[in-house]
Image (cartoon, rainbow, N blue to C red; front, side, top):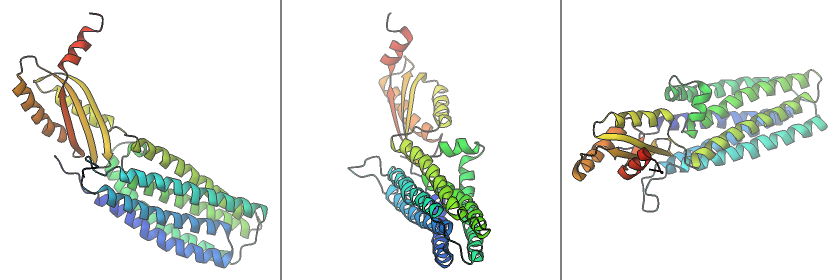
Length: 315
C-alpha cells in the first residue's frame, strides 16, 4: 500500500495563521478597551475565534495522521473534516452571530469613539499580519490548484486546513476594511457607523461559515475524488489489453491525502483465473501511479454484470 503524503504544507498554513491571529487578537482587544469601538471589539472577537479555530485545525491534523487501527481500518483521515465542521460552527456562532448582536446593540445605543487613531494604527498592523498569513495560505492553495479556476478549485479542494484558513484570512482582511470605515464614520460624526460596521462584519463571517459548513459536510459524507482523477484511472485501465470494459470506477476521500478507489472490470474472456488475479495485482500499482493520494485500491471482476449490460434485461 502506498503511504500518504505528509501534510507539511497544511501545518505551515495553519501555524502561520495561528501566530498571526494570536498577536492580532491581543492588540485589537487593547485598542477596543482604550477607544470603546464596537467594530474593533468585533474584530478582536473575530481574531480570537480564528485563533481557536487554528488550534482545532491543528488538533484535526494531528488526529487525522494516526495510523489505521482495528476500530478504524481505513485510518482517521476524516477527523480533519469533523474538526473543520466544528470550526465552521464556531465562526457562525461565536464570530458571526455575536458580531451581529454587538453591531445592532451599538446602532440602537451608539457611543462615541475616543482616540480613533489607535484603532487606525491597530487596523494597519493587523492588515500586515493578516496579509502575511493570507499569502502563506494563498501560495499553498495556488500550488495545489494549479491551473484550475479559483472558485472551482475552492469548491473542489479536499483539504479544509488550507481553504478554511484562506477564507478566514480573506474575510479578516475585508473585515478590517469594514472596521476602518466604521471607525472613520463614527469619528466623522456618524455615531451609528461603528455598529453598522460590526454588523456587516458579522454577516460576512456568517456567509463564510455557511460555505465552510457546506463544504465540510460534503467531505464528511463521503465525497468522491475529482472527475479528473477518476477519468485518468478509467483511461489507464481501458488501455490495458487484458481489459474488455471498465464497468465502474468508484472513489471516496478518506482524508485530504487519502483516496479509496474501487474498480469493476470486465476482463478478456480468454484470461484464466490466475491471469485475472495477476492482472488485478498489476492494476493496484497502475492505479496508484495515477495519483499519489490513492492509497487503497479494490479490483473486482464483473463479467456477469458486463454481459448483462451488453445484452440488456429483455434478451
